[in-house]
Structures are given as C-alpha cells and as structure tokens.
Length: 550
Image (cartoon, rainbow, N blue to C red; front, side, top):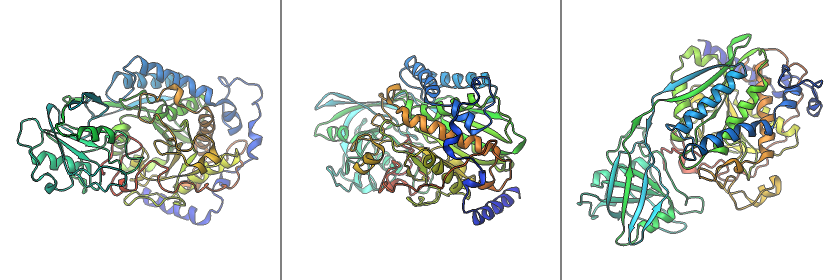
C-alpha cells in the first residue's frame, strides 16, 4: 500500500518538476566554499553544504586508502571476500565509524569461498597463467590433455565455441583427465561449461574471445547460469584465461594442470552504519563495495568509493539529519553483487518502502578518469532489457550533473546496466544513482581532449590487477567526487521531495546549483565497460568479476 502511494507521488513530482535540483533550494555554488568561521572540522556540526565541503577532501579519503593498502600488504596483497584481508577491512570500517558516533551493525550472509585457482601449461611449453574459478564451478585437480573446441582465432572472429553439443562431436574426451578449451562468444558461459561436462571433460578452461582489443584480458565470470536463469552447479573445475593464454593452450600436443580447491562455507559481512533522522521512515542510503578481487588490493576498485563514504561519515558525526542516513560497505560484490543482493532480499516490503533512494559509488578515482553519472534519463544509453530504472532516478542524475556543472567539470553518461550494487535496489523499485570514473575501456582522443589523460589507454589500466594499489588513484578525480558525494548525501538528508515526493526541510544555508550543462556525448559504445552482448539477462559484470551471460 505505502509503496503504491509513494510511487504515485513520485510520478506526480516528476510530471510537475522542470527544475528538480532547484527544489532543494539554494546560494550560488561558488559562495559555499568559504572557511566555516575558523572552527575545527573535528568539532563543528557540518550541517550546511558550505561547512561540509570545507572539511571533506581527497586527503582525508587517502588516509583510509592507505589503511586499506596496509591491510592488503599484510594479507597476500588483496582484500577479497572470504579472506583475512576482507575481515580486517570490515574491522577498520566498523571501528572508524563507531569512533565517529554512527550506529554500526553487521549484516551477515552465507557465502561459499573458493581458494585461489591455478592454471599451468606443461607442454609444448611450460608456463603458469593468471586465472580464476568461475562461480558455479566444481572443485578438482586435473592434469591432462587440452582439447580445443571449435575455436575461431584472430581479430574479428565470430566464435561460437562450445555453444552447441555438436561442437564436441568427434573430439576425444574418453581419457580420465581431459581439459576442454573453449572460447568466449555467442552464448552463456554456463552453456559452454555444461556442454563440456556432458561431453566427458574433467575440466574446462574458458578463454577470452580476442575478436577485439577490448576482449583479450583474463575472463572470469559466472559459469553457473543458463539463459533462463536456471542455477547450475558444475561437477568439474571451470577456470578462465586471457585470449593470448588460450591461444598458447590451443597448440598441438598441449597438456595442462587445472586446480580449483574445495569450497568452504565462510559467511561474509556487510557493514551498515546509520544516523537516525527526525523522519526515520524516509531513509537516504549510500553504499560502496568493500571487497577487492583476489588479484590485487583493490584501492581504486573499490577502496575509492569505500574511503569516500568513510571520509564523509566522519565529517557528519555531529549532524542531526531530517531523514535517516544509512551507509553500507558491501561484501562479495566481485563475486556477483552478493552482499547487496542478500541485504535487499532480507528486507521486508515495509523496510524496502522506507528507503527513499540509494546512491552507489564504485571506482570514483580512476587514474585515467572521465567523470560519469548513471544515466537515469537514458539520454546516452538505453537501459538493457530487464534492467528497470525506477521513477526518481532521473532526479538523482540531475543533482550530480548540476554539481559537476557548478564546479566546471565536464561529465558523461554511465550505462544503467545493473553492473554494480545498485542493481538489487532498482529491481525492487528503489530510485538509484551514482558516479563512476571508468574501468577497462580505453579512453578516446575526444575524451582526452576533454578530461586529459592518455587516449588509447584504459580508464584504469590496473583494473582487477595487482597494480591497483595506492598509486592507482587520481587525486583530482577523488577530490571532485568526494565533494559531489558529500553534497548529495547531505542534501538528501534534508529533503528527498524531488525523488520520492516526501517533503523534508530546506537545506540550511541553501544549495544553489545551476542547470546541468549536459553530457559530453563521447560514450559511443562501451564507456561503462559493459559489452552490448552482456546485457541481455541479469548481468553482473560490473566491471566486476561475475557475468552470467557471455
């Protein structure tokens, strides 16, 4: 009932509001930057945009990134879900937020942990390859012949390797330790793995397609889902490889060793911090995933979003908000958005209805950045089939666009693709928005002319790699985005009327933002890092670990 009423109010607001951000009511943007009366940020109540932006900055966020780096250094160079590095990251966030006066709780959920997988070629060359286990994989230790399956190599290829049972006809999988080598392309990873297993393979290696320069890196995704979403648990190990490593493995006479350790039950923890408002039935929520991939410490991805929220939380320690503020640091995002999905699934309808909006911050300091805002109005991207954009999301996009405009920063659209932790929220009708500075996609010459950086290089060349360290963040991008995030969190803590129709109070001191300048329109194809053929189903390839479709 309440959900229906609230959606109706949203629709009415959207129909009548032509200047959404102006409804927050406010002073010219540059006027908010003066020093707040000489008070220490540690002691003052940052209850205005002016005071808050005077106190939050990249330097403060960098202190938290340094802490995450130290945790990774002490724990195998990663902070991945299921590891001690993640546990210590949780402890750091909890202790820091409790010290800042927030009400902190742990939201725990079941999680199956697979230790690091390995892939080595034994003949005709000897080499150890970077790899990872696909979700849905079985455990196993297999040394044997590599059997290539209907490969189509070279740029421009149209691989359908392993998509049909007929692809395996005439191939010899009669031995006790045969390893099927299949290539990305045309169908779900789960189909390829299931077909290989049915044909008699004892292990599967899925390597990247190599049809374009963007599809050559190590691919590790979700092998456990068919087109219709039916879960599959494979009985054999399924691991990934890069295009070049797959080509090497396809050589005549190739033998290899594939190892995926047995799974363990290791429940994981989302960290939830809350500051209760006058209206506790209208919750402003913001989140970032806390885990890294196993390959590296995850300082940009996603220490940057996590650190930005910690920095803002510390500087809101004395705030008494109108609307309740709830911040989240998610677990196991890299394994398929598992933490945020478990959290939302555990909410009753009444609890979901209390959430006015959700803001997501995942990779906000990419070294070769462009500034992007989730495209709530589909001006640059059509939403993938099956990915809803709830009413009110457009208004969130406009707020961030107006902020960038106010500080003279050009911006573009990031696809609303379900690629990160906002996915679970939009699927239950909660408006969402957020910021993104780019992952594996290469910057264009046009983008270099607008944002600087280096054309022809990825927005983040260390995306999902060991080099995603403290040296892999852009201080300017982080500084701009910490302020943008702070502005949105504080503004919505006073009123979400433009998003869901729930009246609040005026922002003290005002917040005058200009109309959005408009996106730069440089996106073209894949600036969000999500391949067009990955969005047909419930995709989780956030730039991150788990993709259900090929």
